[in-house]
Figure 1 (cartoon, rainbow, N blue to C red):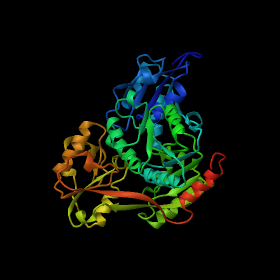
Figure 2: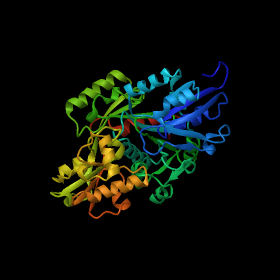
Figure 3: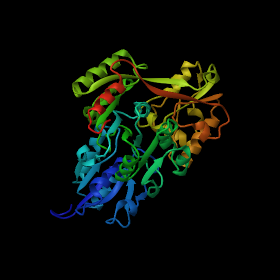
Figure 4: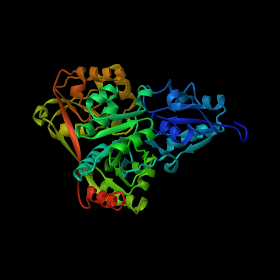
Length: 447
């Protein structure tokens, strides 16, 4: 360990997102800290590279190594590390503390950086949409709010939680206004799942790595920032109105995942999502949990309305269902909206497991909870190829996609592709927009 008064040596545990942001705003310009490494988890292919010097700053002319999280103990002991900083999301509370135990056993402190140190301040009003788990419906809710904001005469910049899984230097500040922009930025399928719906709805998406620069660009171009969060993380920008979604299909997760529980306790408005697909007892239980955990929050009941583009192409046919990838993997769902829509159309669901290409088969083994559907994984070209190969191998007459990505346009497939689209809808009173509008009008900057 470093002697008292000397430079503190730090490792940041991450998954290519919150870790980079925390480094940029807390550690990059601190001469009393040396960040010896980032570690990588959750996302395949993001380890064994470097955070480049152009992003790491003048104190790191060689950049900062990004190594697998499995090497934590060796990094701590070989590097005489003083502090391990946990900086990623949608992780069970017990797993967060298992990592703490590994750090403490090596003699290091274990730290969680909070909103006060990591949230940026914008010069325009900020509405944030967060959730207690991946796959609660943040993007459809943010898209709904963006439409209402535009209808109110406001220009709205959508800021997305980062997903810099590819080349890092070119992703410093991204402004994405068209599908051509997504192609030029070499966005993965996972990035497209979040960006495409906003772009198709007429929004401009701002994302990347350097959120100081991203916020400054967005506030120059728009009257309001709409934060569309990732996983169950809290926002990078301090919100004036914070909307948080809870999921009655995963009742109980709101108190057992980090930082989702903290996010729920921070909310101004809590939306019980997917009430149209949930058991009434689970909805009521969630309402009781919210009333205990966050008494000051307003409560909204929301629905996720799913529609097939061409139900006649699905009715009675053998269908392969492809779902949003992260919702199935670390989101823990066995299936998603595409499966429900295909069943409603009386399709015969074809299980893709026996036909999976080797790389996809390994993913399905890694996540045994996944039902008779396919996660739309595409963090790399090889994963996209494995996804396509699995689809082609599966003896289905039609592909039903519950992923927000237009797979029919992205992949050269040999059968019809029918999209299952889902949108936010209010399922009672008070309605979400009225509550958001009321809170925004209390701001001096709100017209």
